[in-house]
Length: 123
Image 1: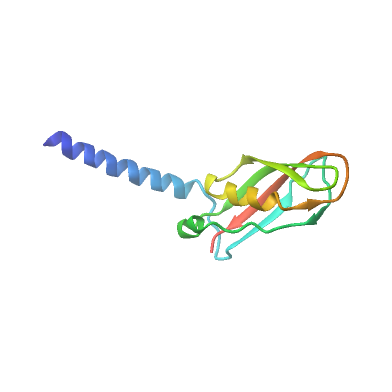
Image 2 (image 1 turned 90 degrees about the vertical axis):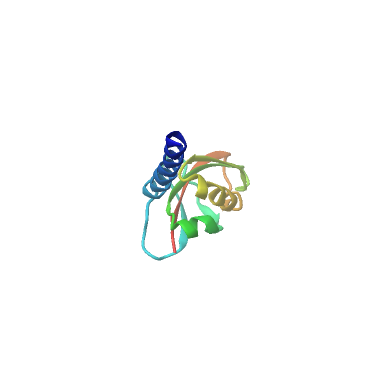
């Protein structure tokens, strides 16, 4: 009987700690509900011709989750984004960032890798 109560208590405590960790590991901002994208400063700064704003994930809205996601975009000579790889940020927000940046268009030039930061602010 004692071990059963202890394991239930341990499970509840683990869940509680996990929720606190998820909340505390994100940046919480005021009520804006938007996501903005920009290039990180660096050597390869090709001009952005067209941006597509990322959609704010429903789960992020429910969790009041915000933060910055960094991705590397491989840009072809014609300016199309060939691929996007996450560099850092919340796993909840990374997919939305990748889906948006793959639709961006850069000015023509030599194939390059561009680091892009997307800032998500909860509603």
